[in-house]
Amino acid sequence: MIKNSIKNLICGIFLFSSASSFAQTEISEKRVSELTNLEISKGISLHIISPEPIQFVDLSTNNLTGDLPAENIARIKITEVSESDSIAAKQNIDLNDLGVITIVCQSFMVQYKVNYLNFKRDAVTNIQIQPEDMQPLEYPKLAFSNTELQKFSLDILRKKMVNKPIREVKSLKQTMQINNVYVVNDYIFLDMTFLNSTNLGYDIDAIKFSVEDKKIYKATNNQSIALNPVYQLYNQKQFKKNYRNIYVFKKFTYPNSKVMKIRLLEEQLSGRAIEMTVKYSDILNADTF
Image (cartoon, rainbow, N blue to C red; front, side, top):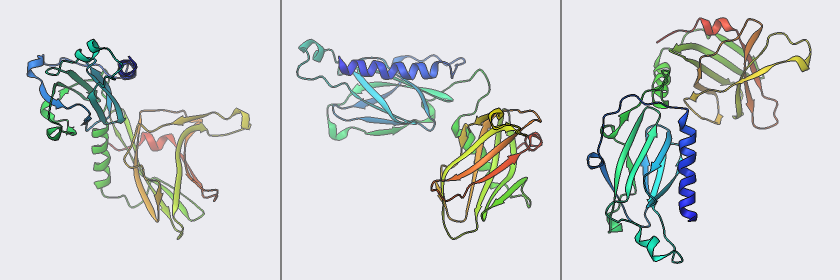
């Protein structure tokens, strides 16, 4: 019962978290007999690796249980039955047909029919989701998957660097630059470079983005709204001399009375922090590609 409760809880969480995030258009009808077959042995976990973050997993029977050890990996195994459980519960597992696994990602879904494999030595422990098994999904508003955002970000890195950055600030031999701003549909891409002119490496605590009042008359009246990137190309935490990254935001606007603030903060109490102010005109003049 505990195992089944955990399984139902996991599936419920997956369903709740994804219910408001995706909507599917017409998906070609598929029968169970047409699904790709997977084989699982008792005591062996099968890891299904997705090219995109997984939004939702459904296990059609109590024969299977699973979790998400990483955002793009679903771990599935045969439900274990303890010796204290009834004989009827043990016999409930149909070894020839363990059920169907449905995995929904950002831009596609995939389904597998699971069969029992008696020989552990022949068991497969991980598989990659293949394009031929994917059924495309469409969102209510045009949204890019992390894979697509990664492609756009890499395309930006391949572009020739401009001679002069759009914005640049220097402090304590640290430099922060906005090389360029790009817009693709409802996404804003900030191409940024951080330079360290010292021989002491820089340990990044955080890079914070916010929209704040341009003029602050009283500290208590300052309104700061955090802006969180929906994607960033690299998650590097330390750099020696230079660090370039792409930060992606869903479309945002702010009035002339406010500015965008970008802060680079170091982990240690070294005081090496640097802050940049970005005008809205810099966003409005963004390039397209």
